[in-house]
Image 1 (cartoon, rainbow, N blue to C red):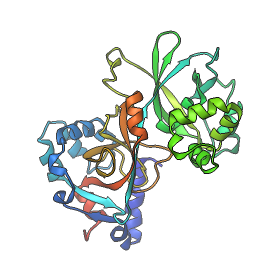
Image 2: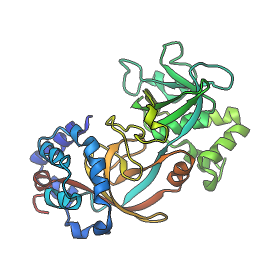
Image 3: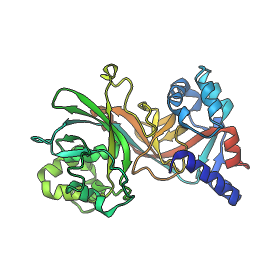
Image 4: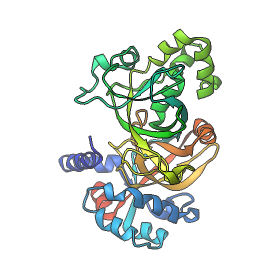
Length: 345
């Protein structure tokens, strides 16, 4: 379901059930957001501008136009938005994601055996013939859907988890691949299953830990990855000349550049794509900052669930892998929409 339709569905449901808003939504004041005064609101505004144009609800259009005129960022958000907690009775769960860098080839040659596919046309949701296992066993072979081949099955698996990545090719060029859709099967954690079965310890369930285990157990390792039937498809994106340092960054689900430590992946059934989202993440590397919902993820489900984008490369991957914390997330909505969702506060 597109994010605009998801929001419309929620509003229609409210009309049918007047108690829904009171049960699900709670408005807050800005002085109730921990750390609000200290944030870099201008950085958040710059990120918001990149994707606000994609929000179709009419209440957003004038705010997007005003944002582009360069107003004082903090005043802008405080004047035209209301903080709304969706299911404020539940604690948030924050994880992290990043843009991995993989080694690849445009052709299946040498160690480059693991294809990265674009989405098939007219694919049926949750087609039993297109599970991860079926695809790994050649269900899409010879259909011209291969974007590139990479040299490590675990790196390919985690590319699916992250939803975007950079592939350094054998010809010296690099390409980006971005999220283009899924096969519709329910996500299940392959590393989590390995921990449950006692194959690896919880502390070793990192990318490097899984890679080492699969390398030692190649046949069993591939079967373990296939425990997750969900499969992500990608689209190819060229890297421009001024992008060598990651200046424009990868693109999220809205096909707009995403920003390290300002972009969130969310569940669009509950959070308006393109909306500002205040997060209060606890634990190591605690965060109090205004982010923007610009991406989605196959494992990101629920109203208080979000993935923080950390950037590109190994350091970003390390920080993302360390993130698994509770806290709170609050969506900033135009005042008129907030009043409809939570008329009694």
